[in-house]
Image 1 (cartoon, rainbow, N blue to C red):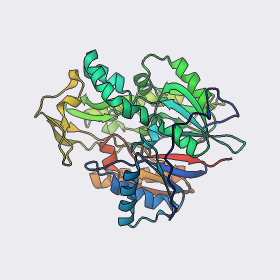
Image 2: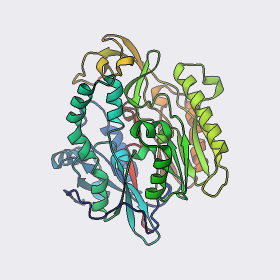
Image 3: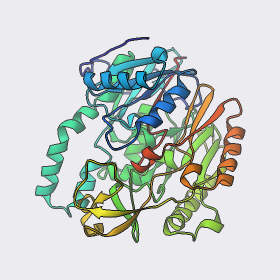
Image 4: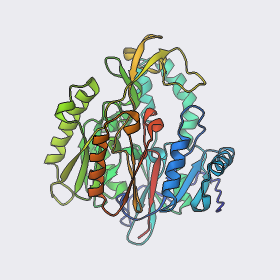
Amino acid sequence: MKKLLFVLPIIFLLSCNKQEDNYYMPAEWEKQDAVWLGWQADSTLGFYPVVTEMIKTLTPNVTVKIAFDSDSLMQTAKSYLKRNQIDTSNIKFYVMPGDRYWIRDHGAAFLVNSKGKLGVADFGWNHYGLPQFLKEQYNNNQDSISKYLNKRLPSMTKTGTVDSLMAVAEGAKIYKTTVVTEGGNIEVNGKGTLIVCESAMKNRNPDLTKEFMEREFKKVLGLSKVIWLKQGLAEDPNGFYRRIAGNYVGGGVQHSDEFVRFANENTILLAWIDESEKDLNPINKMNYQRLTENYQTLKNATDQDGKPFKIVKVPMPDVIPKKIMASKNYTSKVSYDIPANRFYISEAPKVGDTLLRVPASSYLNYLVTNGLVLISSYVKEGSSKEKEVRVRKIFEAQFPKRKIVFINAMPQNWDGGGIHCSTQQQPSKK
């Protein structure tokens, strides 16, 4: 068993504000040295069984690195893994104060260059647009906004340093930018093209122009082309929690990795609602409209070399709402009920109201790593088996040299994320 413990200071000696040495962000399907996971106390979320299955699947193919906010949490995790018969010989453990579960978002966006060196793009972090959420939730009441923001500021600041701590642990050069984004909204083809969800970027950076953000993306990620898609999935709204349509509610962050992914440098997978399903419920109807618009944008787009893309439509899993109640407060028990005061004032239900909560479910929140593709399964949740068979065939065709492994990650979906959000790949140095 390898025992590796880092308690890292906040060091910015390697930081640099100008991209140089030809660093760029490689595609996810390129060779990887490791896959990072986050970990957090999990009394009611139910993440651990899913994480255990992911680790068992990953470790024969790639080194797993796990970050922890504290040493005590790390020791608790080691005991849990041991009890669940996890072979930790291919796992490395790190203490990185400020770490949360969703390491894709706050963790390092790794870069490489032709000299065999590793870099990290260090984006700003504001906890998924928390300032903007509070502004809308409290209807611009500055006292309420400041009170809640100041309460969250220390932990938010610590989390914003985790990507730098990862960079220091790996001896990577840091390229900083003031633009705020999360790793789940960075989808690259490794040749110079990025796809990004515009609604998420505007939410995180309300005072920045698209032109400025695009220049920063190109600078720190080594890009030449940025494709903007206006909106993501309806069940992945900006904010926790939102009224999506009628009594349908949910929480999310509008990330590109929920609805659009590169399968190779010239092929794009796009989440899709068939016309025969668009009127089954309000969520499908909204997604049909949004995804159709995204399809048209991608159809008219070109890559960094001016070539058109091949677009493959991937069915969305069936909408699986859960009937819940707008509660007064959170409980210590496992519950899907949402406190009424967690909504925007303009969208808030009354305590006791019945709501239909939907998870951020998607087949596109998958992870590609050495010899594997990890993808969510929804058959046990009641989604169409025939649809999932079609999805498997699509992935087998797009990733022919990799084993396709389906994992039920619904606990993560209910919390607004999935398999891809739970992981962060570290590319091999070239």
